[in-house]
Image (tube, rainbow, N blue to C red; front, side, top):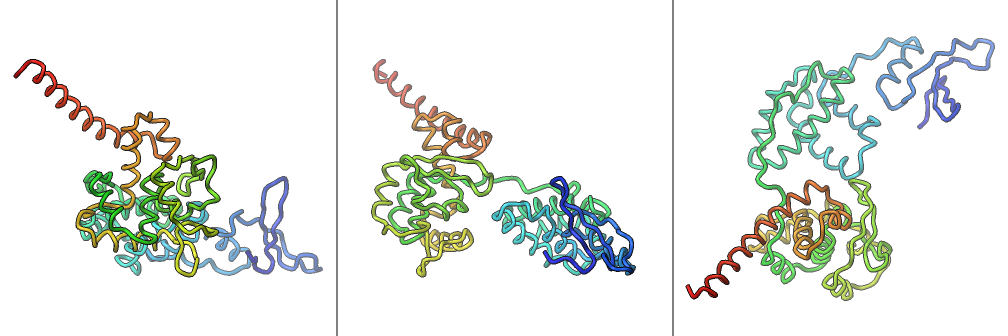
Length: 338
């Protein structure tokens, strides 16, 4: 970034330093004043104004101003791209509610009121709460809030999250989806990857009969074998450089574009009511478990946390055990002549 006149940047022994010195190298050079080491922080610019002899600007008083500081902070910049995209979405919801209001006046009761307005979409409400917790923690530490704005605010109870698709739903999708939505379905269905990684998949990711990739959200490296069903479907796709999912002019899909087109296509198919694209991760996990894969093997392929894998597999195992018990009982009745 371009530094203001009089600000100097020094790198020594692998560390960065900044200082202000007016007229350096001239007969009238001023004193050398050390500045904070992060020129992106509000503190850096406040100290610079002091060094320049300018009265410090008052702290930004509005909630929207704190949001601006958060989005321009190194903390926010260190988040992965998909998390940043989601956070911006939820920040905009909070901005509409309190953007012009004093930040110091926002209280947990206001957060609760905002979440109550989103009661019809509890998943979104919980995501907004998660964002506000991160913002509150960041702002409280830096003096932008006098107290936590989310203390004691409880999320909505989960309704089970993203449910795995049933075989009937998968069959309906394969029958009715077309174009890039169909491609996205097959890639997600047989790799178990998130939408943010599905849009990245390309022929260059293939390694020894599977997709090798570093997941965008977690940074975890996974290897997903290409099943026969997926290989057969991919064989029908025109081979072109770049990502498998591409727009008419050749540009790769974004996650946002995929979400919109998937939702529009899904809503035209009654059998898919209530399904989510993310639910295909669970579908793949359940399928792998039914094939006899261990939890660690599933983690290596799908890149899901052990806790989430066990959650999906417990449900699948209960169903399998229940069916096995019914078959065993029927067999015993048959053998006993009852």
